[in-house]
Length: 399
Ligand SMILES: Nc1nc2c(c(=O)[nH]1)N[C@H]1C(S)=C(S)[C@@H](COP(=O)(O)O)O[C@H]1N2
Ligand SMILES: [Mo]
Image (cartoon, rainbow, N blue to C red):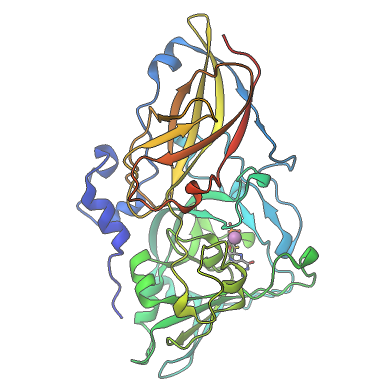
């Protein structure tokens, strides 16, 4: 196998959107760019006074940015409300967590990855031996496929990673000609089961070689310049840019080369509906890529005073998809219809999130449901179509 430039990167570099972020784009390292930031509402921010933030209603009382529970039920919901152009990379301590460090894990020193299945010789790779293949992998967002309103959509974060392209690791192995896929597994044993068996142990996912090449999947060893934190899969975890977090196996300890007869894993079946599979396929080959479609939601609603009147500004994020959405539209409930998002720029880097904002004049106090859509029917937006990212905001006064 040869490491190829993932198509995702080629696409992004060919589009020529957002000049400033693409400066120096002669190299393939477009992936390093942070999220895009539109021009913003200078009139409001220079002449207006920020008074307050209108609260989202019907979400969660759980404290954000704080880890809680252990093992499979361990979580940290990231507080998205403060996102700003200079905070689009989430510090390690605030990055969302889904499953905390397995208490049964006694890490071997050095860490090893067992290689088996359809290879000429089974091998044990020691992680330090892969160090020469390590490189900067840029800013990549992760989203849990179970990200939900009840957790303030806080299972969503972005970080700058370093690691080893999975394709480069496979290229080092004596892979049989009959192999078409690789089963990536991670340590996943806990002394306590998940409450009500909500989450199952046994983290593993099967990837086609084409998926690995196209996404640029990598074995991450560093997060925001630091060694991988324990709860995020130390010392090595998989990152699959553009795919849901359930595919991003933590504490990776096994690679098995398989062919098209490989069954789907328990983890793939557990997450089949959340990754929008057609039923629960028995075979890995029948899984569609667990891709995140273009999605967008508000992260805060600011209340300003401008020229003696109340003016609201909705600030949000857009992420996901394999082509940038040319325009976004927003709806504030039944009466108003769809309006263009004013300060929006098609993202230059689709592997992370970008900010947008738009002014809003609510007609009366009350609760408003905010949803977004992409103004381009050809772009697949399965979750937006289902109003999955709906958030309701409470407005206390209008002019
Ligand atoms: N070994 C192992 N890897 C795992 C999981 C797990 O439970 N065990 N959870 C997966 C899920 S569902 C998600 S969303 C991501 C979360 O990664 P994070 O906690 O670093 O944000 O890890 C994935 N990798
Ligand atoms: Mo997840």
